[in-house]
Amino acid sequence: MKLLFVFFPFLFAFALMFVFVAPGGARPRLQAAWAAWFLFCAAKFLCFDVFGGDAFAHELPEVLIWAWNLAYSGMCLLLAFALAYRFARFVLSPFARLPCGGALWFVVLPLVAWSAAAKGVYNGVKPPVAREVEIVAPELPASLDGYRILHTTDIHASAAARAWRTKAIVEAANAAKPDLICLTGDYFDGMCSAQSANVAPLAGLKARDGVIAVTGNHEYYYDTFAWLRFFRSIGIRFLDSECVFPRPGLAVAGVNDPACIRAGFAPPSAAGAFAAATNGEFRILLQHRPHVGAASPASRCDLQLSGHTHGGVAPLMDMLVARWNGGMTKGFYSRPHRPRIYVSSGAGQWAGFPIRFFDDPELVVFTLRKPEKAE
Image (tube, rainbow, N blue to C red; front, top):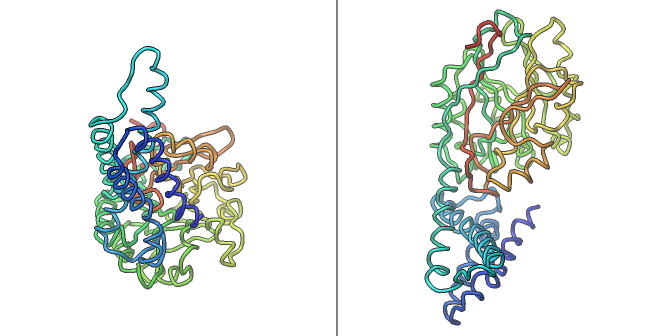
């Protein structure tokens, strides 16, 4: 996949020469200038890999990373807009002739593309805010009515999202005054030695019943065991196919992401994680990917909290994300004989897709309610 991201953008650059530059009738010097610009935009992952040490976990100045993200995202959007414009021009050709070239083509269309990219990049890097969601559950023990659980996921702290952003997430989480904080994976991109300072503010998370976490797939890409030791040192407990009981009547279980197998861990078991919950507890399962294992009725949980999808990132792309995640992208999903599943849009953004549209980063505070107490 890394090679795909490194070299595939150059196909976008070459495609733009055929669908944007050539149809506009640009002069040779302008064609050369556009070609050079598109190649620069497409070289983002290649240059991050060569000069930053890794295509996705690079060590470069934060401003440079996001400026290049803007350039790259604008190129991708320009290709999409140019293709859409040419298609509209073809469809409407019997009725009207849309212009192709001149100021509209070489000024307005790029301006729209990079303005939209700027908004998308900002949406990806801006700190999330806490959102309140009420869950009405008839099976909830009366003692848990009003219990507040903050869920966040996919923080992706890195050289592109440094400690200042992690601190903003922690401040928003603590301001919500949850009883319990649940984290569902993908906390960083990079080696522990390089990125621990950007993750360290998570030590400031405060909840009456503590902080519980599970791993995501990114925890197995970089320095897994060093990271797990680091998280233990800052007081965050990871669950590995096991459950804990923060309050009487409440069982919270967690499973590692299936990527753990490559690091020598035992395969995760959502059903086995609740082996100790035998007294009719309200069961909450933490599982990074919404569609893996936990969506089975065998887990016998009442609520599953997941992430991984980043909310689908943007319209149209969300259809691909849903296809890879059992039809789920963000929000609640409930199916007969299966648990309620909430898929969070996540608090951060991965460098592979540096933009968000209609899909803001989020922290979610769930308030558990008995039906008679629901408003």
